[in-house]
View 1 (cartoon, protein in one colour):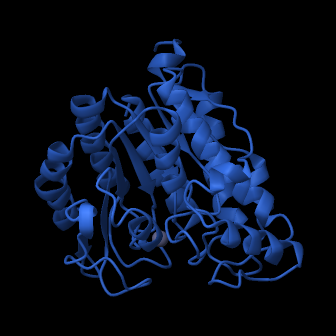
View 2 (tube, protein in one colour):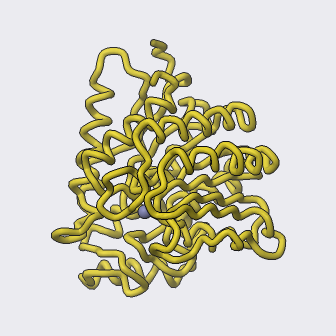
Length: 322
Ligand SMILES: [Zn+2]
């Protein structure tokens, strides 16, 4: 096993993400994060492991404004400061620490992409919460406050010289916020496979972008109960060719594991082995298209033990040691 960090997979996780308290019985719980953190920590504790823990700093307001309206940022912070239980814009539960944690989540995502751009690590996985892909420029919803992955994409373009960004989203839910932010933009290709006819009820196949962005949104809704036998060929035969034609400089993954079998919210049946195979595909494409540059950012996944085992299958594959 190499000890050269540039050959390793960067990991970002931190106990500070436990402070976002969504209340009793909420699926997007600190408990699910604790399970992921424990699994990542155990891996890093092993004598020879393919991972390198990365530091991060909290995001600045200027980072949030790469994708969000300043008035939305202000009301999100105001809702937290005024002890609201939920964001006024949607179903995102909050507590007095939630703004700080959401700023940490963005900062961690930016640290992940910066480490890969600087060649400090081969690729990186950011275990963060709250998730981000339902947050649009002016609205938090679906357990999300700020769109971590979308902000990372704009950061790469505006500050790191990357022109074309692909965002691959395998969360069970469609990332309506990410799609919305880049819908008219041909420099960011948003690609999602998700369960059909569930929250947030967007992501139909005919949502393909508009104006200059026509053709740089790709949605693959699949029926309830679908597993790898249906979803993997879609990635191989539809997503792969489209991604190669787009030829990104950087690949971001909205890594939701609520499409895993047994998840209490999603009704798809992907196994840990399927997530390994999806990861292998994305790593192969990244090698071919963009020198292997991938940063994966946690989205959903609500069964703590299933989530942590799927995350480990994913990061082991990213490291090339599965
Ligand atoms: Zn989800």
